[in-house]
Every structure is written in structure tokens, then in C-alpha cells.
Image (cartoon, rainbow, N blue to C red; front, side):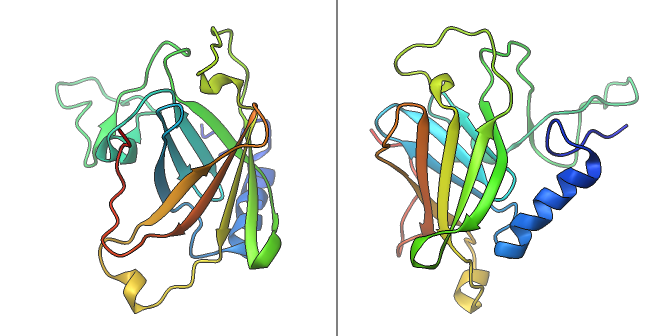
Length: 189
């Protein structure tokens, strides 16, 4: 049995939401971008048009790009947990997991940008400190429509993003942009 890709929706409504985002920027849909919040030492992973994940600590880029296990093997054997792709384990303690924000809305923004709003999946009964991302209720992501040209098809095919100074304690603002020449995505000291 498959659950809808967006919580609290039917499968059809969830697909409609995904396709709504794809109408705005079909080349960027589900493209993953990772950035680091230098003020709080958080790692933010944006899968555009679907989900934003916020880790309450710094995660190295290769680890942030790994797929989290969200399924169980249907057979029990020594090879049951060996997959053809690299995964990271599912944290059993909900207070140690990254926070997940699902796409809530997509709309045209200012200066030809696209604005997406992501909302928290569900509240947890976890301790919230001043530096905890658990206080965030909404994440706003802006980006220009991804225009594929020959340069963008060459490796590495990655976009960069910046966590912007926020106007509210429970909102995070992110801007996705083209990486500068020889720019690296790294954890800020």
C-alpha cells in the first residue's frame, strides 16, 4: 500500500499539488539543493516543489543528498538491507529526526521569481530551544524559473541556495540561485 506523497490528502489531490508546482517550473521539480544556515548551524535540503528538510545540526553534503530509508525490506535475509543506491537510516526517535515541511503553495513572485511555501508536517512533543528549528512553522523559497542550456547540463548540475535573514522567528526564507563560478557548497565555520 502506498501513501500519498503529501500528508492528509488523497493520492489524486497529492499528485495535483505536485503537478501544480511542475506547471510553474518543470525543469526544477524535485531538484535537490542543499544550503547551510550560518546563524544556527542548520542544514537545509530543498527538493523543490515537494519538501524541505531542516536538520538541527550540520550535515556533510554527501550525507544530506543520501535518500533516507522510508521502507522496510519485504524479505528477511543477510542481503535485505543492501540496496542499489546509498541510503541513510531512519531515526527512530522523532526528536532526533530532521524536520519535514511539505509544499503548501506555489505562486508567481516579484521580478519573475517563483515563490513556494512549505509547511510543517506535524508537531512533535519535543523540547524547543532558542536555536531549535522546531519553532519554524513555514519555509518560503524563491527561485527563478530554471532555464536549461548547455552549461547547466554539464557536471556538476547543481543549484546553490542561501538562507536569508528572516522577518519572523517562525519563518525561514531561502533563495535558490545559480552557483557562481567554482562555488562550493560547504559548511560555514
